[in-house]
Image: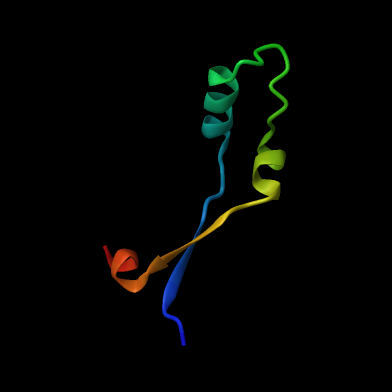
Length: 52
């Protein structure tokens, strides 16, 4: 058995606004809230990291 915790980030509107403002495509950034949350990355962490 492997003891790991999983972290999945779910983006909110302020993060999407920040990405769109910081990106080079000011006129059409192409990043939407639905698009950013469609495919998520899952990060695994040890039990010790999950407790802190």
